[in-house]
Length: 523
Image (cartoon, rainbow, N blue to C red):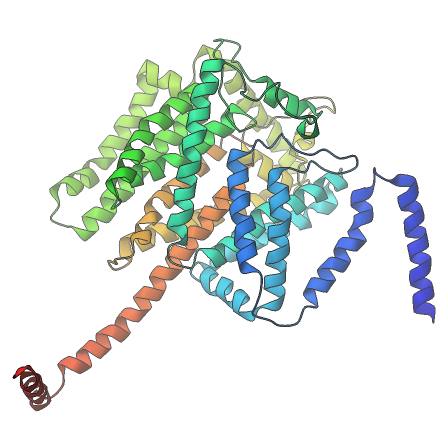
């Protein structure tokens, strides 16, 4: 008798507070409903018929919307965060993921089996996700930090787990990388047109229901021009020119791979044409991080390609020459960036970029005392306040490593870097040690590992985390390919044992088998 009375009293109080605070406190008041929804999903009975197709469909929509749809064009309803394309597709994807995890043992086993290829990296990813929640009590803006952590769990953890399930199936990795290629082509075209028009193409044509009255959205629509040189900086569908430059640099290894890989002639020509086109887009953004990522992609992919080819064809003089000459080539490239004036300006900047270089140095000096004051972390999204920015200042931290260290502490930074380092190490080890295979997707470890290496380079000078869903998708691709290679290697001893048994048959059995075959061939 007391239970329904207590629940009724709670509902009356709950409804009263909702009536006097809506729509400004919709998110906190929706928390009990979300908890009940999670409990209902957890209580689902075991059933291997789960919505994996719907999950993959929303996952694909998230990846496409992440690149092709500007994040600053969103529905802005009172009391709610921006309803962006990523959130509009990410929440249903997470819903289908939770149902599948709760109800299907087969689904859980497949994810665990894939992640077992790199168990330490997978545990570090889970620990990093847990560390995001651990640092929440240290945040001075708890609501903002909670919102940021929830979004990261949807866009990072959710995408990563879904990818582990999807990409274990042969053919899926190549299909999604082809999707990125198809997305990159209109992005390049938009950058060229925007650079010619000298303004964001849809500025002044945004419908009222997608117009966000926020300073950051207005800055994104206004375009950007470098004050010292007057050069317009293209951004296409990204909120900043730096974001476009990062995406283009990360697509370079795949353009290289399609140009030299075992693909149809049309696709190889397309990859070959994309290589210079991507560089021109990087120059249109006037972003040095894009140049650094582009050059890193070229050099690292050349190293991986030559090592893999040399291992499989020891008599190949060209690849042997590249391998032995690579240290000299690398040092020559570094020396060119230091002593050749034009290259030095492109990579490190000149007088026009002096203020930006000085700001980065100041940020590192500001971050160290804040990190020493609280090495555990200040909570998600609190790095700017921890560094000492004022309440009305525009907060723009250049290095993502500074942001991670201040938000999630020294442990969070260590887990973040070590996770990527271990995945890259597993990819390189598999490339060099795995036995030859007819699986064309195995060769995709080269551009994937190159892309992740370039990503780590870019993160040193770029803080914006919008591209992270695509990156964690690629991390899962690497893990899936490593798992597939280990599974194939485990089958080799069984095949060899069966072949040995056949070869060790008595000669009389082989002779009898030969006689039977000859008898069948007689007319």
